[in-house]
Image 1 (spheres, one colour):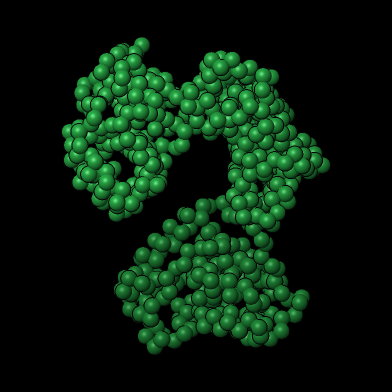
Image 2 (image 1 turned 60 degrees about the vertical axis):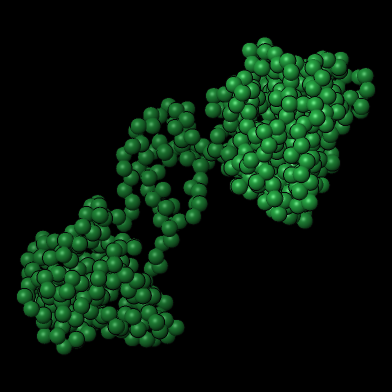
Amino acid sequence: MARRWRPQSFAEVVGQDHVTITLQRAIERSRIAHAYIFAGPRGVGKTTTARLLAKAVNCANLKNGSDGRPEPCNECPSCEDITTGNALDVIEIDGASNNKVEDVRTLRENIKFAPSSLAKKVYIIDEVHMLSPAAFNALLKTLEEPPEHAMFIFATTEIHKIPATVISRCQRFDFKRIATREIRGQLQRIAEGDRIDLAADALVAIALKAEGALRDALSILDQLVAYQGEERVTGDVVRQALGLIGSEIYFRTTEVAATGEIGAALELADDILGGGYDAREFLRGFQRHVLNLLFLRAGGSADELDVADEDRKSYVKTAERHSDEDLLRMGEWAADTEDILREALDPAVRLELLLVRMARMDRAVDLGELLGRMGVEPDSFKQPVKHSGESSPDMETHIAETTALTAEGNIGGGGKGRARMKPEKDASPENGGGEPPPGEPEEGDDDGGPDLPEDPPGGLSAGNAGPSPSAQNGDENDEDNDLDESPEADSGQLSLTDLRAAWLDLCDRVNLEKRTLGTHLEVGAPTSMENGAVEVTFDPANAFEYQQVLRHQDRIRKAFRLQFGLSKKFVVKKGTIPENLRPRKRKTSGEKREERFREALNENPVWKQMVERFDLKLRDDG
C-alpha cells in the first residue's frame, strides 16, 4: 500500500511544505544546487522527495500545479523511467552496504561520464550516515566540485553522524514528523480510494500508533486490512490486532486518582498486566492522556484533541474533576516510573505502586475557593501573624545597627576590630535604658545570626583611643577590663531557674558574637550560680564543646551582660549534669511551624473553623 500510494508530485507530499515549496521555487528560478541533504525521522518522505526532485530536474515538460508551482508531468519518458525505476542515470545507493572507500572510488570514476538519456545524472544515497569516515573524506572533493551534469541527494535519519565538512557542501533540509491530523486525513483519502471500511476511532488509533511516520501508518493499515478482510475496521479491531491500550483504561486511571480507592487501583493494575499490555506503553499513553487534560484546563477546545469523537465529552468531564497540580504530579510520576521500568526486574510491582500512589495522592486545595464556599472574603486574612518568641522589630534592622557599631569600632584595628562599648550606668533595666529586661531576648536574637568578626589582639574600644593593657598582653579574659562591674550593672536579680529558662536565648545571643559558639554552649547546662559566678557543666563525652566554651569565656560573658544586663564570671567544668538541671531542648522546625499554626488558628476563628470543618492537616514537606 505504501508503494502504491507513494506521492508522484510535490503537492502530494504530506506535511513537508517547507521543503517542497523551497525546492519548487528553486526549480522555477533555475537555482538547483549540486548537492542536497535531507534529514529527518523515518517514514516522513525523504526518499520520496529525492525521487521527485530527480524527476523534476530531468522532466522535459514541467507543468504548473494547482498552486501555480512547477511539477513533473509524469508523462514524458524520463518521468516514466524514474517512476518505474528504470532510469539508468538516477542511481540509488544504499549507504549501509556501500560504505567503503572502494565504493566511493567507483562512484568517482563513474560520475565523470555524461548521462545516457537524462539531462542530469542524480546520485541518491540513502542512510548516508553509514559511510565510513574514510569514505566521507574520499567523497569531499567530488562533492564540492562535481561535474556539471551530476547531482547528489543524501538522505539520513541521523544527521549528527555526518561530518560537518560534508554538511557544509550541501543544502540541508530538515523533515519533520507529520502531524496526527494530517496522517488521519491521508489515511481517510487512501481508505476511500481503496474502498476500505475504516471507522473514525480506528483512524485515530492508527495515526497515534504511527507517531508521525506516514509510512508506518500505511503499513499498519495494510496489516489491518489483511487481518479484518472485507469487514469494517473499528477501533477495537485496531487495539486487538496491535495490542494497543484503549482510552477507557486511561479514564479509569484518572478516576482512581479522583476517588482514592486502593482496591480499584490494584484491580486496574491487574487488568493492564493481565490483558498482556506493556507497562511502559501504558505509561507513555497515560502521559499523553494527562497532556490532553492539561490542554483542556488551559482553555483549549476538545475539538482540537487527537482523540476519538466519543471520547471528547469524557475528556471535558475528567478535566473538570482534577486540578492542574494533581495532573502535573500524575504525569511526572508516570514519566519517572517509565524511566525506572527500563531496568526494573519487577515491572508489575512498580506499576501497582504507582497506581496506589495516585489513589492515595493528597489533593491540592485552593484555600480561596474554600473560603468562598464558606462565605468568607479572602482579604480578611491579610493581617500579619505574630510568631511566638519573635520580637516585633525586624531582624534586618538589628543586623544593620550591629554592622554600624562594628564599622565605628574599626578606628585603628587594621580593619578587623570591633567596637567594645562600655556600659552606660543609666542603661540598666531599672533606669529604662536600651538593655532588655532579664529573661527576654533582644531584637534580632535568633538562630543563624551573622558571624561578627573576632576581636583582634590590638582591637580598640569605642571609649579608648588606644589598646587596653590586657589586649596588648594577649590576656584571654580581656573582657574583664571592658565590662564595668559596678553595682548598678549587677543590681538585677536573676535566679538559676530564670537562667535555665532563658538558656537557649543566651545561646542565640552568643551565636551573634561568634557563630557556632552558642551551639557549643547549648550542649552544656548551668548547674550553679553563686558568689557572682555562673557554673556551666559539660558531660565528659562533650569534650570538644567544653574546650570551645572554655576558650571563649570572654565572649560568653559579654553576651550574658547584653542579654541580662548583669556581669557574671563563668566557671566551666566537666561532670555529670543532673537531669533536673538540664535546660529545655530547642524546638524543631516542625514543632515551631506547628506552634505558629496553632497560634494563627487561635487568632483567626474563621481559619480554625475551616480547619475543623475540612479536617485539614499541617503538612511538613521538610
